[in-house]
Image (cartoon, rainbow, N blue to C red; front, top):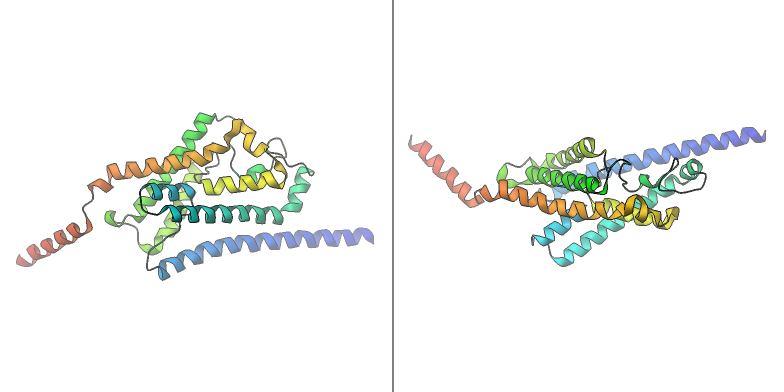
Length: 258
């Protein structure tokens, strides 16, 4: 009888975990999907979200946002990322402890720290990892600029969030092997801090030759390099908007004369 009760409770716990996992997955999907549409509609096509400290720092260096906005954005990003890590840890707490037998480790056969933050593949050097993160972020920024550049035939407003998501997915599929493609300090550092507090300890910072600083610095430098490349190859050659309108008007007048 006792064994039957245990089996029923085990089934119920499993069902509850599956329900919570589905709830969280659908929640994330719907928040991203609905909020992107709402932002496009209510913001009249404009978007102020960065969600990436590398982009925020780059925008501040370029003078597009103030220092106060920089601090507010990064605090918001880090807080949201930290809370996301805490939420996932709470939801999978039982499964994590069963899988690890209560020993939370960064490396080894039952390592689980990589659930929350990125770690390089065993055969990748620090130099190779840095170059991977740098290059992946360059591609991210170039893609974002192409999608959003109004002076260069940007994608339609409603499609921009979807195209950006496809861009990130493509980077992950093509460049994710070496490092897990952090490409965002806000995605990597706050969860790493959480894991250090939650039981994994300082190994999350010292593992893999103190790898942790690479997904923080490489995306920032890659973001700056990406913007520089775009400006040199495309943006500096674009005509100002008012010149483009004048050219269209002149072309229209010439056509009408014909």
